[in-house]
Length: 84
Image (tube, rainbow, N blue to C red):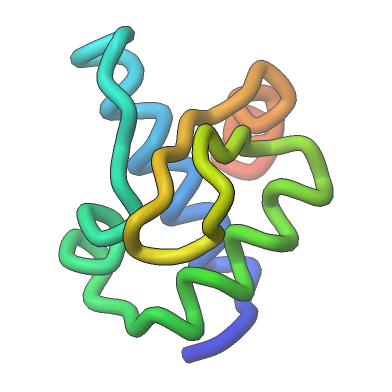
């Protein structure tokens, strides 16, 4: 699938929903891969862009399936803009 705006919005939406339901939960990359049915390359490339834009915070060194990730306030604002 690679880079796509729709996928980035889906990742942010999933992270927002998890944060709303379980504020202290850290999401692993593989959870997003399973939920959105994407491959490792798609996850890594979109994580890198989302991190560079300041929409997510990676809580581990990797940008792949083993990484821990949380949505940032900027990411929450981006979701609000794209879902209005």
